[in-house]
Length: 163
Image 1 (cartoon, rainbow, N blue to C red):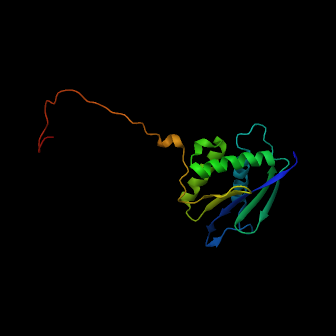
Image 2: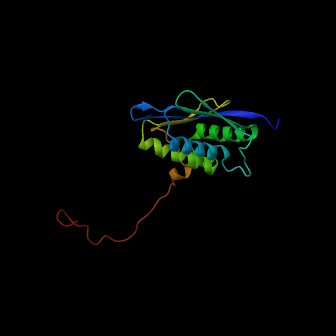
Image 3: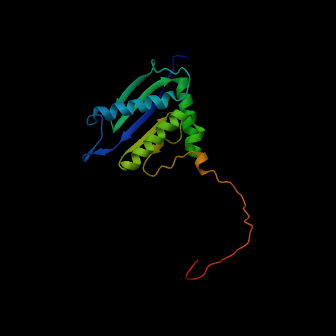
């Protein structure tokens, strides 16, 4: 059905000033930034993606957002998250989504108490971004097998004092 909405859960856990981050203690810039990143992650690179029909719930426990989005858009997010969960390769998902996840990884490395997570209804494991998460672009680890030969004549091999 075109009007069908699907849930996607996003949460932000942190300890700030010795107090756990909750919907009652979150400051406005943190919440606004998190909402903008969630919107960017949901939309991805889908042309003409609109969240005008979506709904949002703030739930108890950390800063937990439950976004109700169009079924087709949620299926696209679910597909990218499943690929990322299986491979850990950011090159296999949409670039805007990869950019948000990279930003989250950088933040949790600067603040180890911070944890981001994303879960959809049909995803076996939720994607958790902690300070040990290693999502990266597959092209960053591209190794090429090669052999090199050096030819020439050694004129001075040096020695103990003058190598």
